[in-house]
Length: 293
Length: 336
Image (tube, rainbow over all chains, first blue to last red):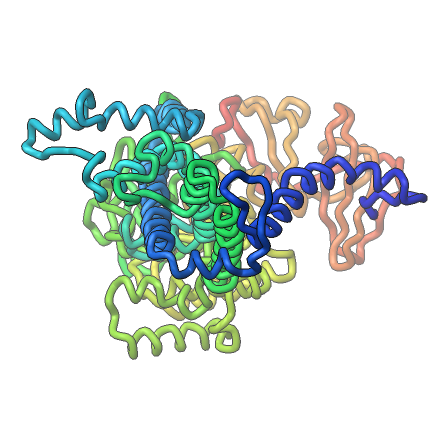
């Protein structure tokens, strides 16, 4: 039986898709179009008129050492966030999967951090690592390590990576656990009887069979690290020290709203859009081939 | 090749005991079938031998050595699962070679052994395919291949044919029997299908509710069932049970009388041990199954040659049998 609904006219179907189209148009196409348009102009200091410069904004950006540095920062930051949040989540999911008793409690507790908004998570971690009042910073001091992410760029990076990964671990954990539980028990048992011990089974059977989940999470987490970590960066480091944590999306904000260079900011959003689009295409084209569905 | 011994094996899940002490000595190269209805504990018993379930009490020995605490990978056994449990991301070759690779068998030997198994199972053409590109019967063969390349001490089969269609099941049954004979590896085979049990087993264990009701050679079990359950479970169509009183046999304490369909004959109504009204007949060609309604409402099945005359529906008939063929059972289900 054909389950698709057939309409006689075009009016009703058009009315049904209109809300979704309107939302997409207003909140996506319009701003994206605006960004592309704005990226071609340089407004004057008072915002009274703007001058058409063509690709001038882009040329300036690509020659700007700060902008290039931001690219590297973003690459480091998003790789670390993706790696940490997925790695820890997988580890926890494997443990939870082996658990027979009280796995429900364990699971519930692990999901909670996901409910915490990135900006709030940022503040929480900032408190713990605060140079003056932070508990963790104080204990590190007792151990002889002087923690100061306000001055030390690498420590700042570490802190924003931890804060960004933390809430994300819950999300990834849920997917990994579901993925693990979808693997037929008998396949694992067959591997055990074939002589494979736990880690051998994990790398030769479980991990390959989990690859659709892993791939999906990879794409989603990279996008997350590129965009949604703004709140964390803003609350913890504001991109500092010395731009050590200024990722591309933060620079869009900093240059546009703080520096009031709207042409450059718009050009940066366009570049960001293209970069994430390319990354996603690359992931689908090259990594998806290794996925076993 | 090895002996397997189950010594008063018990299994509890929480507070419920599902296996109430099963014992059997399996000789080298013997083919043992564990048969019983679903939920009787037969798969659990097999999984205990495999090491996939712990043993609550008693002892499992493979080649004379206690293996209760041994991990599955250290027991040197191979198992064929009902759903085949093939590794979906590996080719047929890799599926079969997996265990050998883990055992660090040298590459050329792996290739030879897989090739030999593939030839035996007619899988040569499929070595590069993934399991999802194979039919049910071929997948079953790959699962068998994975078991035989390792040359284990024992084969364990967990209802390996239940997912196949009827025709394929008959064919694979013969192939399994052939293979086992050729390789001479001790085998433990679980099934709910009594035809598989009868045809494959050197000896069979009939299980019911966690108890081994009878252990013996198929024909011995068939002709001399130890309990009412065994008499009813083994044989198709099933044994007819009559109350011993109705046939005047209650004298020695018997509660029920069992008579197999092929041992009963029709006769005139007045000369039969019991009367029955012809309800319907199933003419299968070589044989005919007659179903008669007894005065107490129960159905009685009788098997006769395809050439025999078939009474009309509604006719009153007598049913008679030779006394040596009747099986008498006590009220607790035991054999008199």
